[in-house]
Image (cartoon, rainbow, N blue to C red):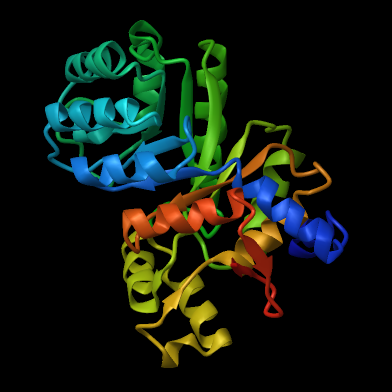
Length: 311
């Protein structure tokens, strides 16, 4: 892995004026993630988020494919771009994946997906992993042109760093060889050095695909810690809480603005390549959407604590 200090020195400090401009520019490229939005949620964010913003739809074990298709249609009808997660091990066979992708493309005009293995270590059927989906040709056969793959700057909860990195590079190469565009969406984190170190590692390996860096949207600290525990980044969240004294204010709303500002500034000179934020709406979909859009509208100012806040 690349030394953290090298990654942190990629960009020099910016003036306040340039830093604010960079935050606004960075957030204008954001994507958004919703776990299980209702029809009302989708109508609401359709009036808040920028038209054409990508909205990633989290894969849930046992979810009815018809429900996912209906959600994707609603997101498209709201003027946003649906990006459904496809969890390989959640499907019994490649035929069921083929049917689902055919409906997503035909009914919701989905051309971009987020391809993951799935939370379960034991497949429900004959599809073992995401690599099998890429190799099958089922994506291109159903109009999919762009595939997102997961990245883990804080490490994977089960696999070793070497296993995760080998898997990612292999899948990227296979997808690109198949004529698919690719990008990476990272797991959310609460410390900037691992994020920058991980992106620097990618770039030094010649992996220059776009990277969407995951951030947990505004929520109370207990919500952050709960999702961090479930997703394998609890140590990062608890370190942040202890350093900032937030552990004493467990139900106070917190936001990732200092983290976003640091990554925005670090990527300002372009050496980190195509980097943009990806907001997980853990604290409520409408409130997360409004928070995401405040910088895009220029309605924020920098804070002495190193973040930004709405005017």
